[in-house]
Image 1 (cartoon, rainbow, N blue to C red):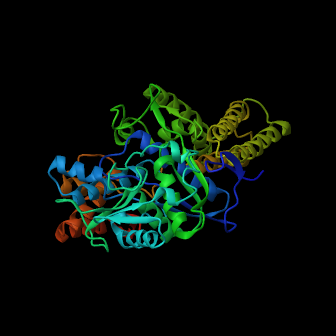
Image 2 (image 1 turned 90 degrees about the horizontal axis):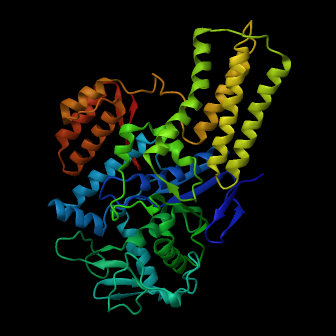
Image 3 (image 1 turned 45 degrees about the vertical axis):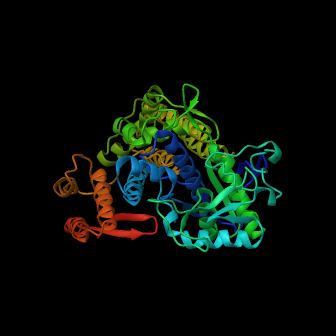
Length: 498
């Protein structure tokens, strides 16, 4: 069976055929960095992390681009409320986002462009749209003319004549049509601004994704992803401005994740019914949070509750128990047997291993059905537990190779979902001394080495943005003394052993 995905644009499941066999290009809308992310935001980022991981599991090389909106009305408002500079707010919450994604075991994007780094590309795209008659300028503002693009509404299935102006689209009497949306906003006192052919100003929210995806992935790429609430107007507007500018499809497959709900309502900051991801991770391990979310198909609404997290913790322990038991047998050489092992019993366990792998792939090939894939893993867990309980390693340890194969299968397949079944190895773990370093330099009060490293990186980023080179050097040199080096990448700083 080949991989099939549900394409929002066609409203059906389709065989997934990337432009270049073995290579997949993905763009997923990232965060607007004005606050800590809540558990609902996290679901989207986790869902597309799993999709990426499975594509890689199937042997593809994935180029994964996820933007960071670091200039926006929400950031400006937050900064004004707190009496801070907007850039300071954006830097702080960018670092917090990267830190919490690392804790949730979400893989770092191949490229994570920031809006403020792509201003020239956005100006160039807006200029192309003006030149082609799809956009117009009014008093320093630039608007996209929605009715100039005949395909508007094709992603969401909306009739253009029945639409009202969408969210994040300011109603402005100067616009030719209420549906027209801003590509460029003229400067207002006290707000960030950049020079442009139309005067100082800043980009509109929708424009950045089109400019970024074109620069990083080309004119048409494989997968565009995001939460279901972005279908309209954000993704609809992206399609309009990109395809009007290039004359080619923006993406071949549109994937959208279902929203996370509390008491049948969407979780959101505006409704006040949200929990911050960082608070959830104080009480529940990242693997447990991932498991809870993956028990529901990524396109379906997910009902969130602490009770469900507690159930997921129990389920995670069920996955870990046989893996841990077999690992202990390997290290300690424990052997026991309640009864002799028959050839039929070994064949049955070997068959269970093979069936699990086959079922896992079948389920994931069906539009990334993680619930079905997890069910396959639990079937193998039951088979391993039955086998261990009856036969152990056998009288002469003859069962150990088969048990190790079962353990490695569970680890590999769970790993394809980003669920770690064994702890970080000593070789990979950060030394405990980083906790003391973070306490000394930052007053950090945590007792987790990973958290301490992330706090140090965030402090370094803030120091560099404020041109406090002495503080930035303190962080770098302190880590170097512990045998750790900071590596600056396009998607942010990371720490590796030197």
